Amino acid sequence: MLRPLPHDLEVGGRGASSGGVGMARPHAPHGGRRAAGTHRAAWARLLWVAAMAGAALLLAALVRQLALRRLGGGGGADSGMGFDPGMSCGDRMASLGLDLDGPGASSHLPVRVFERQSIYSRMDGAVELKGLSLGGVITQGLAQADLFHFSVRGSDVQVAPVLRPLDTPVRAMILPLLQASANTHIQAAVERTLLPVLPPGAIWLQDHRLYHATLYHASSHSMPVEASPDEVAQETRSIRSVTSRHCPIQGVLERIVITNTGVIVACWQVLLTGTEPADLRAALAAALPRSPPRDGQMVKEPSMLHTTVARLLLPPETLHATVDPQAVGNAVRALSSQLCGLTAEFDEVWFVEEQDLLALALEGRYIKHVAPLTCPARDQ
Image 1 (cartoon, rainbow, N blue to C red):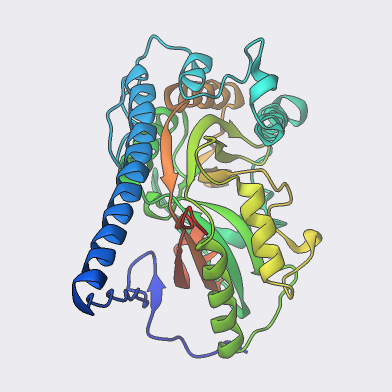
Image 2: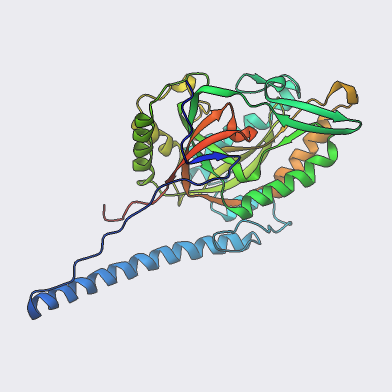
């Protein structure tokens, strides 16, 4: 049964989560001049090592800054906006070291990069092969009527989510897109490009503050795995142990696609300076032996990294409105062209307990446990 909600409940992305990090202070040196001299020498060696490590990090940051400036973007934690409109998508990707179509691309890029490219290419061609089918199944076997309802007053249409409480919460590990310059840029581009070609009631826009990429499930709605509060706490510790050994994921948006059921998806590539998603998923699976097998996982492709930004809907019959597949296709292609090359850092994992079905997508109830992605020490 649904257990009482703890104090760190978050509804619609608002609330607080617990957790802290402690740091031990070094003991003061003692024991005479010889000991003091030894400590001074040790500290000098530590300072030299730290300086060298800092120089290496600074060089890596400068290389990334130069690549971003070639795209017309700025620097710092909120970089990734302001592309040079004259650059093609391929040129933007190549500027960041992801030359996917160049003559020597396969010789220096990992195979996972091309796995992602192949997956996204198949997704990109789904509408051309199958057509655009709205009003039926949208995601995970759930139809539009299972997820949304309409309120119509004249030509005004309000779309509201249908929240379904779960007896066994879905427990998922996600990568939230917290970088404001990225999530607000995507949201603005989606609204600017898609809304003009759609009739009222034909779209559900995801909350940009909850944009995320799903990594792994400890329990899914198709294969629920019950867990006591103590077992959830142990899962949280296991997940944090994994994330403490992995660096942030450096994402680069390769394209925007639309599935044949009308889901608008941002598809990410990964810079080589960060963690590979397939490696992180494998580590999470090993740390959570009770989790559902591949058939019970919502993301079945290990290398995939994607974010749902909107869902197209079949408008209410009373409006006698239709969605033009060609106009939508053109808009999605324009959106993809605008956003290709957008960079974003995914620097933490959220372990979420969704109290309602698809809580993150439908602004329902969920509990989050934050697990930062922190690169391990170089000497470990």
